[in-house]
Amino acid sequence: MIQRDPWKGILDEDEKILWQGRPDCKFKLSLGQFVGGLFGLTFAGFALFWMISVFMAAGGFFWMFGLLHFIVGAVMAGFSLVGPAYKCRHTWYTLTDRRAFIATDMIFKGKFLNFYPITSETHLTFQDGNPASVYFHNGFRTTKKNSQNIGIGFERIQDGATVYRHMRDIQKRHPA
Image (cartoon, rainbow, N blue to C red; front, side, top):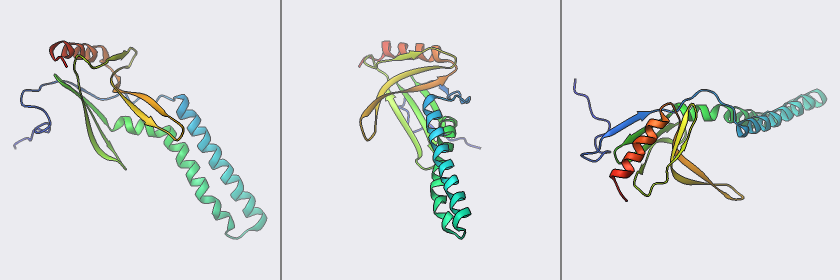
């Protein structure tokens, strides 16, 4: 059986893969997840309270108008708690001797492969820990009120120090 090279057509002819990995997906509850989950549960709880009150007072099917609000609150709570873990489980990292690749496969967004050249101009940030993170690009997340600068990189990886060293070596070999 002939195996097809999944990197054919993506990597340059003499480009070599130095490291591949995935983020550590152990459950970690952040403040944002907690607040989002709490808001969703509060929203769903109020809708449930309203539906029960209306059913007890009026009967019939009028209580069903609260179902949409209950479902929205439950989905908000669930996604706040489970969404980051889902994204983590569907993310893959690759470092070559020239570029960093981040691949994702999300249900509603589909498959994406983003790459970021590593040059002497690339600002690297190493966040030590167990697991560690290495950031190599800045992106922006826009909200209704403002835009927020976010770091893009290999997040929550077990061999972060090694990956960071590889990137520093790439910077020395490949000037901008």
